[in-house]
Amino acid sequence: MSAVRVTLEASELPTAWFNILPRLATPLEPPLHPATREPVGPDDLAPLFPMALIAQEMSSEPWIDIPGEVLDILSLWRPTPLVRAERLERALDTPARIYFKDESGSPAGSHKPNTAVPQAFYNRAEGIDRLTTETGAGQWGTALSFACTQFGLDCSVYMVRASYEQKPYRTILMQTWGSEVIPSPVDQPDHPGSLGLAISDAVRDAAGRADTHYALGSVLNHVLLHQTIIGLEAKRQLELAGESDPDVVLGCCGGGSNLGGIALPFVADEHVRLVAAEPSSCPTLTEGHFDYDFGDAAGMTPLLPMYTLGHEFVPPAIHAGGLRYHGDSPIISNLVKSGRMEAVAYPQATTFEAAVQFANTEGKLPAPETGHVIRAVIDEALAAKEAAEERVLLFNFSGHGLLDLSAYDDYRHGRLVDT
Image (cartoon, rainbow, N blue to C red; front, side, top):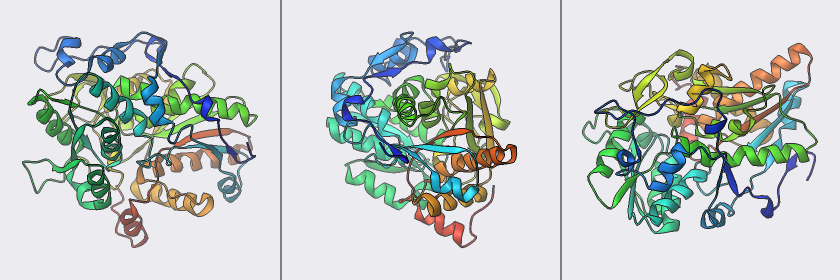
C-alpha cells in the first residue's frame, strides 16, 4: 500500500456477491408480464435467461457465492486498485479527500465484464450456444464479446446506431473477439437509435432461436448483484487507507450497474450519502416519473417498476451512449424513491470539462459516461471547500475513454451539442 494507491492481494478477491434485495427498507414490486400484466414467474423468463440468473434475480439470500470458474477469469484484472486523486484535490484546493475505484483495467476497459463473465458462464452451463445483447457506447457489447470468447459462445450485439457511427473502434474490438455487430434499429437505417430499440432487436432475435439467450448489461437485479464486487473491494481498501466510511459515494447512472456496484454495499451505512449522476439530455431519475414501464421500445420485455421517461423516448445522440436509457434499475429507482439516494443531472459540455480536468491532473482519460460522475465529484469537493469541511468522497471510475477520442475531438473543436 502507498499513500495514493491501495491494492489488494489476489487472495482478497471477494468470493461472494452482496445481495441488496433482502436488505431494502421497501421491498421491490415484482416485474409484470407484458401481455397479462400479472407478476412474472421463472417460467416466463426461461426463454431469455438461464435458471441460475433467474434465481439470482429473485433471491432473498444475503450473499451469493461466486463460482470458481468466474473467479478465475475475474482474477485476470481483479482486485482493482483504489486510488486517491491527490492531484485533483490540489487543483481544486479542497479539504475533501477524493478516492476512485479504477475499473478501467479490465479487458474491455470498464466495469462491465464483472457481470458479462458470470452471465456467459451460467448460460454455457445451461447448454446455450449463443447470446444476443444491445449496447450503447459499446462498453457492454465489448465486455460480453470478451466473456463469450472465454466460454465458447457466439455473440450478436445490436449497437445503437448513433454510437455505431461515432465509435468504430468499439465495433472493431467486438469483432476481434468474434462477435457480430449490427447497427440498431435494424429496420430504420436513418434512425439514430436508442437503447430501448436495441433491446427490442436483441430480444426479438433471442426469442426466435432455441439455442440463444439474451444478456443485459444493466438494470436487472442480477446485474447489479454481480457488480457489488466493486464496492466490497472498496470498503476493504478504504480501511487499509486509514479511512472510516466515506461521506459520499457517487457513480454515473444510465441503467444503474456501475453505480449499484459501488453504492449498494454502503446502503446500510445511513450516514453515507449516495449520489447518481446522469445526463440532462436523458434525466430519468431527476425528471422521469416512477411507474411500471417496458424495458424496451417495442414492449416485448416485462414491465419494471422504475423511474422512466417513457419506453418510446429517444434521447439526443450524446457521446455518453451508455447513459442514454429511458429507464433505470428497479433497485436504484427504489433507493431514489425512498430518499436513500440522490440524483443530479449535467449537460454534455460541463461533463467533458470535468473529464479533461481529471485527465490533466490524474493522467487518466475518462469515458464520456464517467465524466458525469467526475463532474459531480468536483462539485462535491468544491462544496466541501466552501464549507471548510473535510469530507471523504468515493466514486467509481467506470471506464477509460481511449476508444472515445472522437468525443474529445468534438469537445475541443466546439462541436458538442450541449444538451
